[in-house]
Image (cartoon, rainbow, N blue to C red; front, side, top):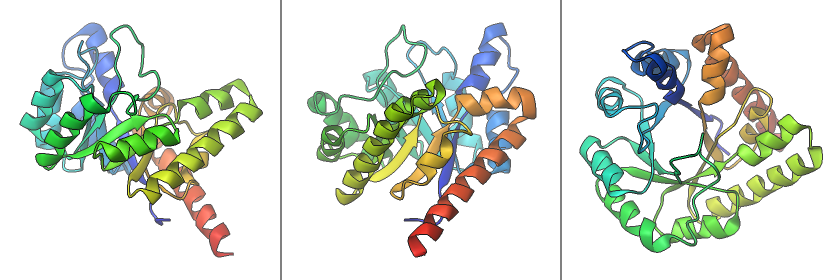
Length: 255
């Protein structure tokens, strides 16, 4: 279990606010710089087919101007492959995408789409880009991710987070057990394990305590919380909760 848990901050919804009115304010690249100063280890941005938040120019500026690793989330389409190969971010996380969805709904069906995903993974990895697949905490999908050649999986944390919000302790416990099992299976197969989607101050400790997870990617909650407390404060609080939960887990294992 690594002592340090990385935090990736997703700055998509800074761009969402900008795009609501047009122009250049607020600037997601400025938000990325603030996030790094507050303790983010990486920056995540999702370039969608319809460009509803992050734009192509944002990707140009992020990969050019931000010194920490950039994680480009995108769908497995020829257009996105070409963009990724042109800009060569540190990592690409392939996600499912439907034009009508408000946010990403569930993980990739890697087991059912291996023939489609394998060429994308191969070309991205061949360009020196670390490839992650966003999946539900399901052992079948974990095994399929390893089979198509991905180096990383990102577990879809939404089910657990939604159960916590609903106060459904039984469902939350079942979801968390699935994350523990999927993370352990992934590590045994040599995959690096991340988690993201829906994580908040109230749910981050559960994921920080999963020993195989080395990175959490958090966006919407932090940008929303920044309205009330500022981005720096929100990230520093999240960073502190992550560190505390990881330290407590390490202490419990050493006791």
